[in-house]
Length: 275
DNA sequence: AGCGGAACCTGTCGGC
DNA sequence: TGCCGACAGGTTCCGC
Image 1: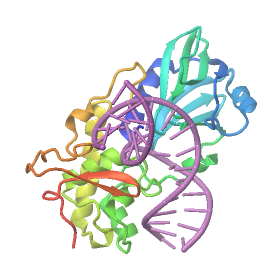
Image 2: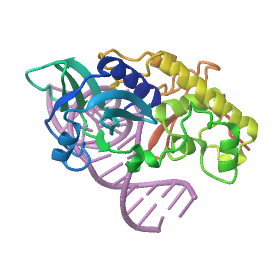
Image 3: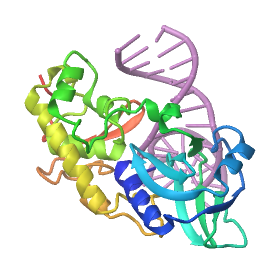
Image 4: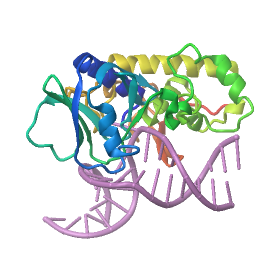
């Protein structure tokens, strides 16, 4: 489901809701592989821990707990965190209840059970976290980084931007939007890129992500915020999900192609191959 | 190195 | 109406 702006939104909202609360117990309703490792150990590690901070790394939600440990969650396609008053019954797709000392519940809900929850003493003990590339909103994200790393690579730009080992946090929606704003064809091979192309990628990545965060992310179908509200960035999408609709710049119908088994949307007129 | 395909699991939507 | 295939914002593994 969510990409960087959605996870950022959830992290902020969770943090303001539950920071300082204490996990008094944990109930698990249906643990398709959601919880990594031993379930009893998972519960024991959490009980009595204080929620010290909640933040985002790439598309992962990190709960920094005290005494020191980290609950690391990936929402994948349909995962959600919801904070509510205590309920008598779990609803259909509730997977884990974190019962808080304040009497409230933090619910992990996931229709498809693709989401993950793991506990680590140190963040880098997590195999998923330690493989991640740079944060797209950090200082490291600059023209030099890409130019050095990729000037000999024949990979397509869409594939590069989706690769979490290079830049961590971009997903299918935002990559289509970034390439549209950059005027670059998604199948362009990165070895053709000049510095000015990377400048566009770097600047529009920041621009798109910052606008999306300011609008609390994009809700197409599943994404909901902690309070069940939707994000609003879908109003500003130019190409994603717009097959055959007129391009907002030139009126040409938007194309849909498949790259790496994923949909890519773009405008043939506005987005040119690099040669 | 990097690509394509399959797999994880469930729901929804469009076409016939 | 009903069935069937395609598709869904993510990641990982395997084989070539």
